[in-house]
Length: 220
Image 1 (cartoon, rainbow, N blue to C red):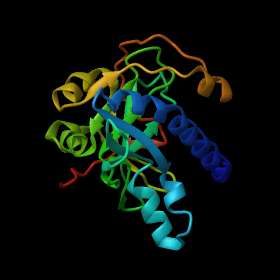
Image 2: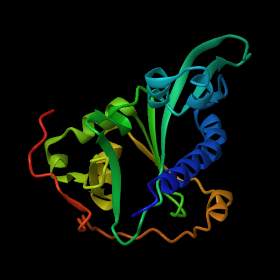
Image 3: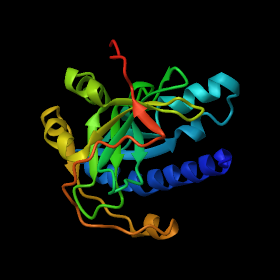
């Protein structure tokens, strides 16, 4: 039997490592000569005094929160929140994975209330960071053609997810208002003993014995 608790903790550590690497980049990317975007904290910090369902609900809202200021950085104009997915992309499958439901509850971009959704692929050397408004991503995934990619895992969580070949997704992602940028972090990869590879154009929509096709069309 797999050590699910141990794997969960490793995945959590990987995700937090991705968040820590990305927030300085996000500050630079969204700031301009007349606007400063400054990192505040993550959802763990905001939820630190909550318990039970309130704690879990707060963690689902977003991963990172920023403040948006004018040049003076005195008065905050608005808050800006991000949901971050740092993916250990497997080149043998060639797929991007977006969660839809976990144990019957909406998850991933569908369960978050963040302003933006970030999908980062640290193994790639370039064009490895997908950035889009979360509501635009949901609109994209709700299109009829992506129902063909809705699958679920047969583990205890019964996680429903979209498993989409990367090369099929890029153009439609950009058309939907997303941006594909480049961001590298040798530190994150070194910490986890992971190496990079050059971008390939592999197209594989793969279902192993542990993932099977979700037969019934999901009604949005």
